[in-house]
Image (tube, rainbow, N blue to C red):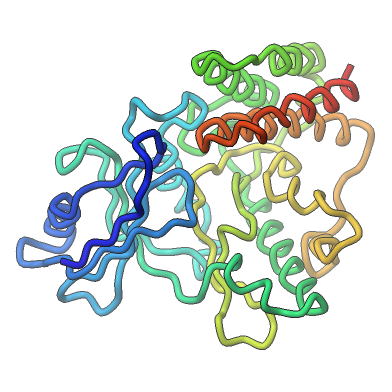
Length: 331
């Protein structure tokens, strides 16, 4: 087998598996006579360890995604792959864009980690292709992103919080629980989380504003340019694939990472996200704006964890200034 892992330091969060383990997974999924001809690790993701695997008897390569070891997962990121698997039946509205799950295995019998085998999406990752288009063509890309996000947000759910649970009966309970989990993770790393505790207290004191959200809607959790595929032959950007839906949750659509990123650079091609053929207008009432600050604090807390995981010390320090600005608007 041609085995091509990415060279990483011993301190790196993402851990490889061996070629023998990949062969064992292929035997489990495709039968004892199946053999992996090649396994190439893909480097775009920053959480799971992902390989493109060519297997005898299969017309196309498949994608093998392997979750971090359970003991390496943050409390706020517990069993994300299982959460994605639980989300699939709720995402049929965008099924033509998503990879098919061939097999998912939580047994830890083959390796001591959750893993999933999915179909290989056509196209090229947007970060590799979008920049090749002229700026005049890029609003169309963001308009498509808005339409996809709108479709996802239209899906109604049974509870608040992560799709796979734990479930919450109110939106404020789900938001506060998420903030508490992120705070506990920061504490466990020895990082200062006093600012996030203040945000949590504000959210608890004003929970009635959060609880104006009474209908759980599907949030993609991480849908943005890094998680979409483009047609690599189209004269203008055309989204043909969406992947890595492992951070899905039920809640207020305005809390979605997609909304945060669409708002990040006003006055640019991202404004097309809000067109009538895209997402449409966003609620900017006083209550909605207040809630958006709580959501931003939650995003910053998650970013702080990720920057620590990636060894980005300067970026990590920047989250304290960012969260101080949010707190100043909340209090």
